[in-house]
Length: 82
Image 1 (cartoon, rainbow, N blue to C red):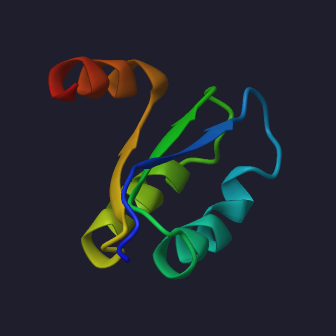
Image 2 (cartoon, rainbow, N blue to C red):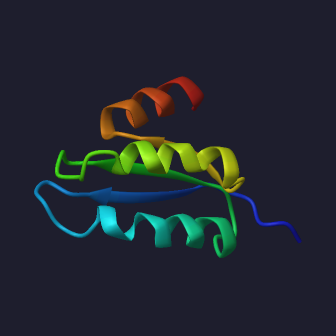
């Protein structure tokens, strides 16, 4: 049986911290362990420069990662797709 559904992975980092340092591991988990496709919602403004850009580039090689959105962009995506 093929799993169906959509997983929302959400991370918020309001100030400097370690959430953005965990993105490579989360990306690998989405690619290798998640039973359904995923969308990553990440926001808060506290990420290191380039962290979100790096994650967005992973959509090309990670077939289980459908998109990476900030909170506002995710709401726009959801309104347009559901």
